[in-house]
Length: 343
Image 1 (cartoon, rainbow, N blue to C red):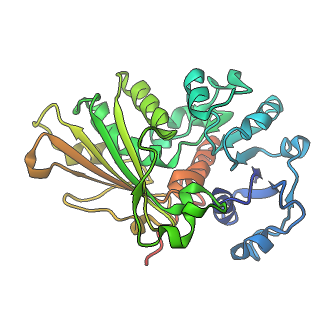
Image 2: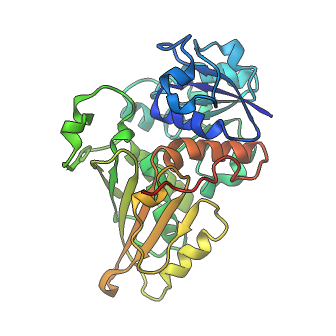
């Protein structure tokens, strides 16, 4: 059994980790930390876990965490970097769901997160945990940085086109929408039901922290500079991301459907839908699936990719467990081969 610890178990990504790991046949949940809820049984805070998770929250203790085979960090940004170096020294593997190790450019990270990174020496060691991109590196990684939710949906949509050299990399547009759970489990007026229900708005138009992540990953992988306009929106729903991606084709002599089907033919958690499909966020709710459809409206030089995920599963906790399965040599679908919930 894989001995697992979770740092920061009281947020939405934390409870999703618990929900999925509780049914994972190869996992033993050893410790779940929360400074604010230390001593409280996990099932008191999350009744859906009654009978499945029978331990209490505890203060984060590096000595206890280091006894685990792998530790997940489901914490706000800048928290993981304080504890991760000690765990790495003790040969504990780490899967970080925050943004602390996602970028490779330290100056860019410090600019966007407005703070000094306390362990820049781990930047190069960290592996970007998008399995469809870095599976071989993830296998032997000691530190994995799980991609953000918007980046997951966006990168999976653009990668086949960029890899095949079919689009202009300097004119990419991502128009993406998320549910309110993407803002985290916190009391905030803009996230109240009365504020979000029946409304729809853009935010972060001048710049969003996921923008440099998407640009860096696509540019590095495709070995060409990528320029992206990324506009996120808040939609009146709890879960889900719908990314509508636009790019300019550099050739018309290509079967776009075939490009996507071949790229993701062996990927267990990417579903390339039939021609003409319109994937819905509800079709992936609670699952680790990214559903993609590719369109070429009016047979023009514009390609439109529709990419949907559950931001808390494929965009966070499910993808984190996918990484763990790869790291420990398990079947990649173990514990996360969950059918989406409808309605």
